[in-house]
Image 1 (cartoon, one colour):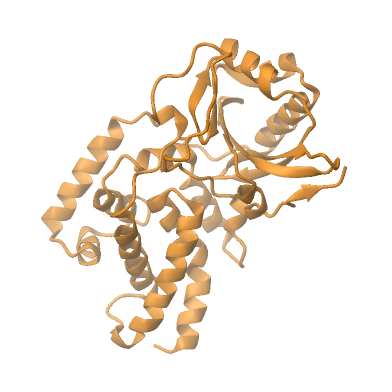
Image 2 (tube, helix red, strand yellow):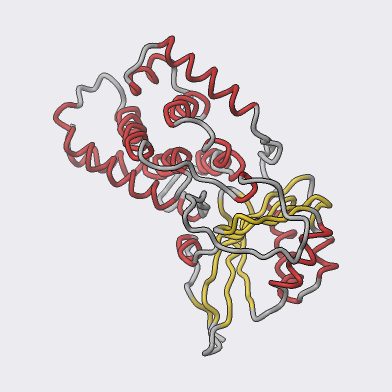
Length: 319
């Protein structure tokens, strides 16, 4: 296989490889690093490629095993709701815990940066929804790999076995255990129907306008009664409008903030900006929303400006 052919195929498949590695790791940064390592391993292994599988299968095999190697030495990533019950008092002290490994968002702008097929992009973005990514973190690494190769990529058991270096019966055992474990995890927020982009954008616009204005009543109009509010890297989280709205009123509403609409994990999202001493607005983080039955059911604020720039948005806005 020529280097030119490998480079062309790698670029064509790059978005899919990033999505695959993100599903494995729960981190966009880790996914980028793993895909880069996949390319280097592919370049070094070109001489050994015998063409018994497609280049696509070969690259995904390398990527999967690169992820497994990296994840064998790391803790599983979490979201606040996976750490325990929500706080019932909106006055609860919130603190950051950087000792935990947190799930990260994946801006939609990361996928489709090249000339990707629109249909494939829809599938990619639907397969990286936050509820699924968080649930996958409960699986041991090899179970996670087997599940993704089978359920997302549609590989046969024999090909999965070749990738993981195990027998077909062992693959089937991994898949049974993975499915059983995922059945125990609440995936009700994982949408099965295609998104209504116009509805989601209208909801987001209403939420942004209400948030910037500090209008709790307007926010109440676009969220469910059991709306949940989380913020990474804070283990404390809140659930129910009777707790979430007072908490936001105390800590967030209309306090020198601006927001820009975007999308992440195939879901509506907004980039947050806070005014600094000079009057400019500096990126503060990325909010990702879950939509259920025409309203927001969950909001997660990822406090890291890098997620904003990864979404292709500016690091700062003029005063």
